[in-house]
Image (tube, helix red, strand yellow):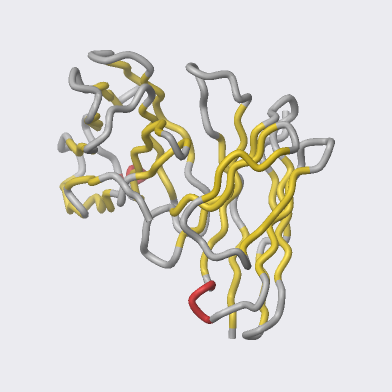
Length: 114
Length: 109
């Protein structure tokens, strides 16, 4: 069974451009989470999607947005890129079955803003 | 952003030694997860804890869900070089999972 897959693996953009990152959850998982991990730092919660709806978002500006498609895959969009947006962006999925929920991560997209 | 306090931040240990790390929060959690992350990769789930006081093992790893529900502990016994990496705790809270600041483990052969 395939795990969480993310694309692209690496993305290089210049300041002011837009970036689109994609995530396919584990088959059967309906919840998708996005986290930002700056170099050497911990994971900062960005967005949570479940059943196609945005359920919660972290303390990030509105230029970070996303969506979840009917097949539960998800897209993260970052507009007006800034240098400090350079980070590893991690997607995770879960079955959404609280309380015995587990979060499984993809390998991430390394975004570099020049 | 919101993060859990993890300690120690980093540690060097000799191969064969036991390792202990912990994670604390000001909030109560109903679930604790422990992950290991290698450079440039996503975190890999090690252990999941769902009940206060629960003690769960996965090979040489043992984790405990604190009685107060505000902390969790991870122990690694007889460390080996491949244990090197960053260990993260995560607690299930209002924002869904909140992650710890990480413990960077380096094992000296």
